[in-house]
Length: 173
Image (cartoon, rainbow, N blue to C red):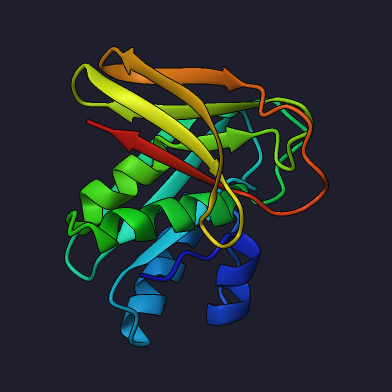
């Protein structure tokens, strides 16, 4: 699975990617060039809607959602790619993995003293959110609570953290 944004898709394919038709052509080109599947991320499209397009060589799937108005967009595509990879590593089928990943977001990115974590649950489940260092060591548990099915948003305050890169582990079930 390759997960380019619009600019990266243009560099990789030579195709102008400014709308859904360009995303479609770029995704097909990437698969034709040897990628197993291509998720062209449309976060940089103009307008109030974010559109992502997945082409797996036989089936096209499009996700549309309202754009979150924020200036803190750095790393959102990387978060989506990492979430999809985490799902795939658990054996989740490709289209489901991308769907789960699209339902997961962290903002602002970079976070200051608090951040929002959005995710989608199929059923009511216990959710645990841990903050980890780059070696996977637990710094602190930020939440451990029951959450309802559907789209969930958690506003979390990790407390004072020195500047750096941290991991968030979201466990449900």
